[in-house]
Amino acid sequence: MTNNVYIVGAGMTPLGKHLDKSVKDLTAMSVSMALVDANIDKEAIEAAWFCNTRQGALEGQHGVRGQSALRAFGFESIAIFNTDNACASSSSGVAQAFAAVKAGLFEVALVVGTEKMNYPEKREAMFEAFKGSWDRELADQHLAALLATGDGIDVPVEYRDLGERSVFMDIYAAQARFHMQRFGTTQRQIAAVAAKNHNHSVLNPYAQYRFPQTVEQVLADRMVSWPITRAMCAPMSDGSGALILASESALARFDRSRAVNLRGIGVSSSSNRTPEQFDRHLTRVAADRCYEMAGVGPDDINLAELHDASAIAEILHSENCRFCDYGDGGVLVESGDTNLGGRLPINVSGGLLSKGHPIGATGAIQLFELVQQLRGEAGDRQVPSARFGMAENGGGFHGLEEAACVVTILEAPVRA
Image (tube, rainbow, N blue to C red; front, side):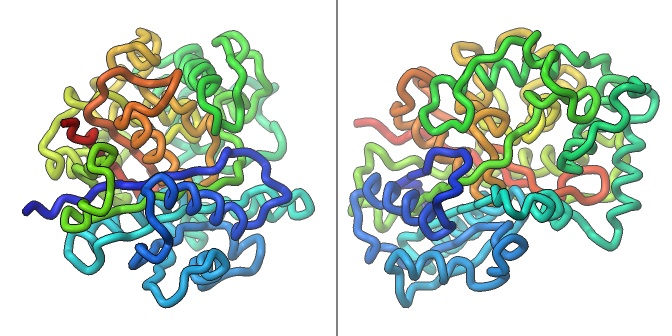
């Protein structure tokens, strides 16, 4: 018998501003859906990982977040672990649960990511919370180094002081300017990512935004941090995603024809690389580790969910995941290959840009999309005959890159 690990249940809430729902409410919604999807009762769950980044800063719930949210649902006595790894929290929870199930500690485990980001009465705190996802002691030093990567392309005078925004959008803007200077990437190519993902999200009933966008509309939107317009930025989202993992030994309890094989997972953190050391980017490191574990390569991937907190990030990570050469990410999106119906559809869910980005829940929600796709249950946005799907989920910033990255490859169920 192999010791494969499978995703046997998946659920998520619609994303948006859920001002009338608590963390406990959103958790109950996604967990209920995952249990129904797996056709089991909660008593079958032996351990759970709860993933969240904001509840401490915005509600004062600094500890035992998972015990609080899951006890409210009725879970008692099981092992519960709390995972906060910035935007990569729930994919990190999946990595931990995968390891525990593969090691034989548990046969059936739950991973749930839940985030409330919208507190209208705490608007200043909402934006201040972003600063918790980098080294506060070295923040000024790191920010200066990051912004310096964009030197060499002058920001138009009218776009130098644009008001309230996440500091991460300034970072993404600097990365965009670096890419533009180094490789000739254009603002229009960055806009093409946003237009594509907005158009994909029209087909996703869970998406926060469900309206199409043209490249021209993206370019004409309000400037956030040049060359990044509002349509090129992920929204602040509330929502929850839940996944149920099971060992090979437990698979007889589930419908094998809907069990998605967690084929590989690679995790990395940042390093002291220079901007030009592309092959040391933490996403490239995590992706290579994932490919090695999965025993497949970039050409085997049929669709991908990449961490597009800003549109430039999809371009960067399509390169880091070896879907194209460094510098060719803009050309790749402009070619149409990453559209639904193209050679390698990327972010057919709408991505973080349009589906939504509930920080600690984002990784689980990316995997929810892949599970639906690999089961053939994605409806109008279905990628035909998909066998392998990849999710890339980055979190925070440290030095010149994200602080954490998790890359996961899933394989479609074996059909009789």
